[in-house]
Length: 357
Image (cartoon, rainbow, N blue to C red; front, side, top):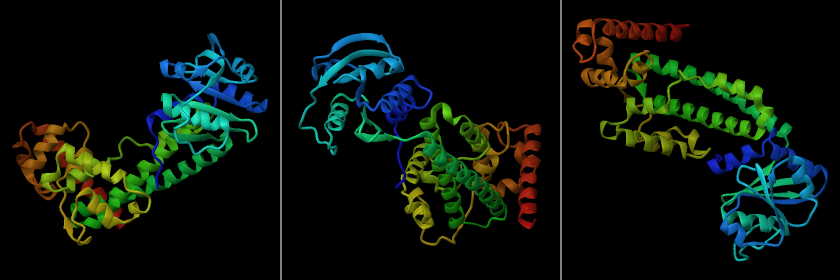
């Protein structure tokens, strides 16, 4: 099952990533073999479950939180971990809140996170582990070397899948020009696009975890995330039935595609059914409207693309159109008509050449 990363977890992980003052403090606590319970945020709810301790209200530093962790009780900071608010606090969360943890510190951390809604960090001295509780999820901090290894693997996989996606898109272009596209071809293209999106998202998550240690990975990811690569909504606009081609329907189809698990995403028939295509016969022909190829023409306004598709009723009619036919479309003058005609001709020639090379 693919992992879903919500914004709260990403924000919290970014605060404890390498290079931050909080991460430096947590590592000092681990090296000192003292545990800690740290609440990132304070409000009336936190105050209502707090007992004892003392107010500090000073600037957060790694050395200060390390010294405060030597004492019994929790440490309370502001949400951004820039100010140390309280120390030596006994936290008394609602004992009826369910928890899967066994240790006292971890049970308290999970319950406080659920009751207050603030991230809570638990540092285990016996196991040398840093655990973060946020939005009902427990996240365990791993060392940078382990994360770096996963990130490099994700980058290599992304490069391979991106190259394969380019081949699939090139093949789809040739099939579209020849009017020989099947449901299988469209489903396979959507599958590759979704896989690239998932791997890119996963690599981005590793970047957040790596913090300042992920600079080289960030450069590689930026190079692989090519802006000229079309998104799945262009493919869906080309092939979904007319009654399911509105923006709302397209977004719904994209969301359903993204929700497929790792087993379902390899099933082309399942992909076709999920997005709204007829999956009875995967080898049945489909006819593109031309949105994807037209989107590859630079400086082409979306409104003009819509009028072209509506005027020529599909890619084949558009490919057969001459300059006079193109100029007859509202918003297209002589120069734009030549650009469209020449661009489509180059695409056709390029696709056919690649097919025979």
